[in-house]
Length: 180
Image (cartoon, rainbow, N blue to C red; front, side, top):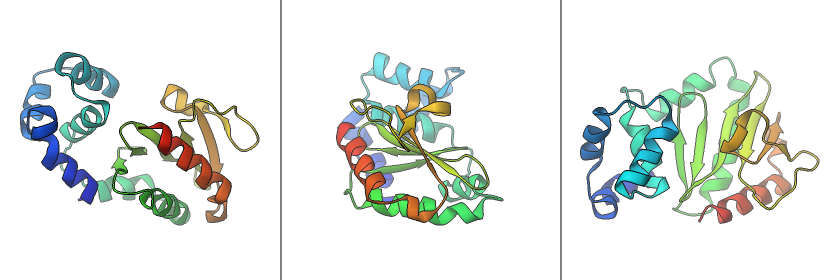
């Protein structure tokens, strides 16, 4: 298990008033059609912060599939993209212990207190990296969010590990800093 996630789960009772298992029981009695509905329920009805709410909802959907299995499934047939994915993780994990890497079925969220980036293997030859940069206008390779909709403000298409250059790293830092 990712050390940051492990720490978050350990701190959950103190920070939210309940353990992960208690939160899972609360959510098991509810029926939400979207992930965001469950997150909003925890935030609005129980005062849980976004980061904890997102983690609780994600982990409550756990069907025994490990994070490693989720990522492996995403890159099945797209193995040539794994070095790009790993380079992005290397960059963001250098930001410090506040970064959470949260694999889901089709994407991997990068979270501080809020999600600041989203990694999606879009095709066999390209990763789409979604970023939340509220004050940055789309320009050049920093496009409008496209398929990410409101989850991100921008998208960058990555086809080679060299695309994770200093410019992209600066955008990641800016998105990370906005997610306080």
